[in-house]
Amino acid sequence: MTTTDARSQHAIGAAWKALQENCLPDGGFALRPGGEFRPDSTALATIAMCAAGLARDALGPSCARLAQAQGDDGRVPLFTNHPDVIWPTALAGISWAL
Image (spheres, one colour):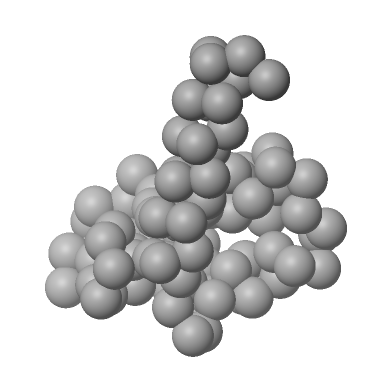
């Protein structure tokens, strides 16, 4: 293994560890360890896990948590107390489509 390959593997391992540290018991993801659920973090984590080759059923809890955050009108707000900040909706849609 070359030095570049070793560095890449280390970086990938560190990123994967950081992703796992942000995972919440309900399948959602926080922005940082110990943080609260965020739909953007959850959707991006789901997309990353899919790109890494995780089986679709392993993504189920994260997709279900995103669905819980979805409003009656279909939007996925960034925060429940700011229902008009809806840009995570597109990321959630990508996650559900994977």
